Image 1 (cartoon, rainbow, N blue to C red):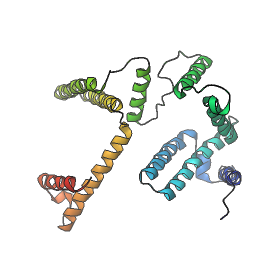
Image 2 (cartoon, helix red, strand yellow):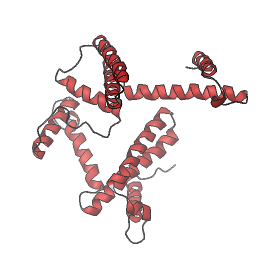
Image 3 (cartoon, one colour):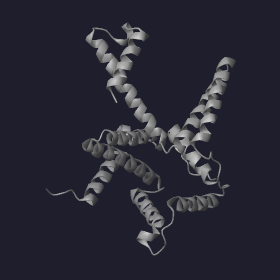
Image 4 (cartoon, one colour):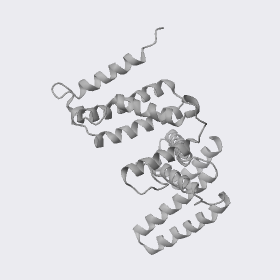
Length: 263
C-alpha cells in the first residue's frame, strides 16, 4: 500500500484552508472567525485527542489529531492574512526550538536539562519584552485550573518554596477544610468560594508530592463516577424506573453494589 506523501498532504490541507478563508468564494463561517473565536475549539480539540488516547482508539486518535492540526493551520492562515506569520514560520519556530533544546543531539554541546534551557529562554524573552522576570513566567492562564495549579507549584518549588514531603501537606489540607467550614457558617459566598479554591490548591499540592498528575486523577475519578452512576440507571431501568423515582437510600445501596463489582 502506497503511503501518502506528508508534504503533499500538508500542502493539500493548507490549500483547503486558503479556499475556506477566501474573501470571495470561501465559507462564510470560516471567514468570520478570529483568533479569539477559534481558541475554544483549539482547546476542545486538544481534549478530544487526550480522550482518544484514554480510550486506546487509534482510529479516533488519527481523526482527532487531524482536527487539532487543522486548528494550527486555521490560526496560521489568519495570521498570514495580517502579515504576522504563516504556517512555515510556525513549523520553523518549533523546529528551531527543538534543535536549540537538544544540543547533545543536533550539535556538539553537552546534554542540558530541558527545564534549564526553557528557563533561559524565558529569561531572554522577559528581557526582550522589558518585563521583570518571574519564575512563574510562561505558565499559560488558559490551562485547566488543576493543571495550572500544579505547574505554578512546580515553578515555585524550583526556588525552594515548597513543602518538604506529602506528610507536611496533610495538615494544610485539614486547615483549609476547617476554613471552608468556617466560611460556610459566615454566609459569605465570595469568601466560601475563595476557601474552596484554597482547599483544591492544597489537594493539588498533595497530588504533586505523591507524584500523581491531578488532572489525570480527576479524569479517572470522573470516568469511575460516570460508570457507576450509569450502572445505577441500568439497574433502575430494569425495574421500570429512573433515578427520579428512586430514593437516595436506594441509589446509595446500588452505588455500593456497583462499587463492589466495578473497578
